[in-house]
Image (cartoon, rainbow, N blue to C red):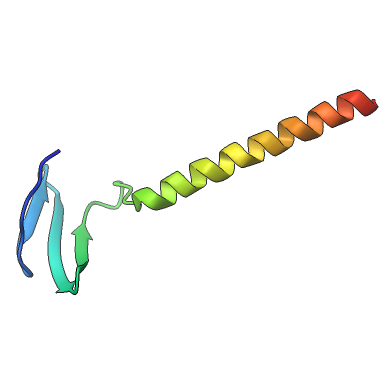
Length: 73
């Protein structure tokens, strides 16, 4: 992991075409802007983790339903 210290207005370049700009630092909340090509997916990590957890719960529910149907069938 690369750890950088940046000030408001400073930028980070990832590869040749992804640019991250520090927009605001307000009491520990950092606002960033990301410029990337349209074909590059930019998603919050927490959102991906939440979706993974929901998928696991859905799979478990489906397995439980199938087991119940098998017993009743």
